[in-house]
Length: 234
Picture 1 (cartoon, rainbow, N blue to C red):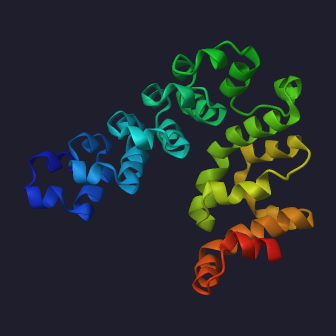
Picture 2 (cartoon, rainbow, N blue to C red):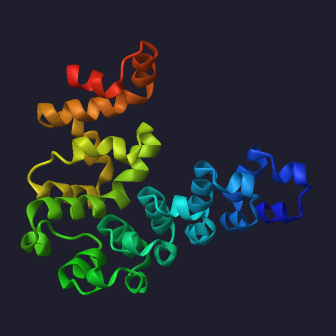
């Protein structure tokens, strides 16, 4: 049981692998992690994956990280209450929180978002029509919100089946037109993801790069080439 970390010998509490295993079993154990390891982002992420409420114990500098807050809110919507106020007003973090926590999580959004009826209606909807209520929003914002809503369905499949992080997949997803085509992601994420390679050339290319990046990037950088420069050449 991860909670046993509190009573473990000092040498075990200083062992990164032991601590990682403990917080992975019981996220709230993060409260008992020693100062020398509590600032380890991977340990904090492991705790949040098990219990988003462990965000309360994450050091301030890591709570300022948007993806850390989104990870916590995705696991437990009301964990958003422990995020810095600026990130409680971040639309993607807010949608992640409401996706999981529903109306209970709304109270922890920034006041600006709470007072935006279009945003609240969209955030609370499970499988919204697109653009639907977002038609009143600027197109770039509508796309951003639609992708944030789709993340709940797409990210697990992309990560588990393709071992691709969400941020690496975004370049391809952002090019999908019209926005209505993102609706499929809400109901059939598998066919949506597997269909990316059959989309127009620019989207298919961006998706292919995301798929080969984990293997190709280390090889490219081993040759002294910056990955971003390599992408420009492609």
